[in-house]
View (tube, each protein chain N blue to C red):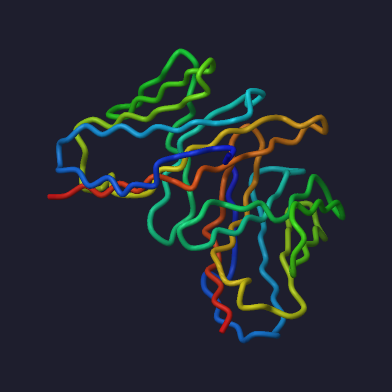
Length: 109
Length: 113
């Protein structure tokens, strides 16, 4: 079965600093990968998804970007963080079911 | 209207109680249905899929009514360890073949000793 590794688990960053969150997947090839953000008390918001290397689709305009440099690697980035970027970021592998990484709790201060 | 709607709760119930959660979805093209469990500050984990015929897994029973676009989850004999947020999730397959998942905001359950 699939295993999704996500790091770091928690992160505190100042406003204006860059961001890089990494997600890697084991146990499957050519996965469909997704980045979600969950704000406190709110549902999961889809940010990006990727069906293959170099293929990124963005769901909402925002301060973030994503990249898929390898088949099992999905990276979420920002050049300059905003306070509103705080939240719980989840990487997921989705097909007939959705499997999540352990998440990164980002606090922008 | 939200694509997937749930009562946020919280539902505070005593141990041993039976509790039911409901969920409605707006897209009649939705193909698959799930309940996920999310513990505080953790990732969502699949609790069970939901089938039109209804399905049961131990103390948990899930039902789907496609005509009414309604999904339910019943938990019998609640345990303290059932305390969590329960997410209603629907998915549909896009023309490109990818699955789009829509998550409800969750219903919070607290089981009291």
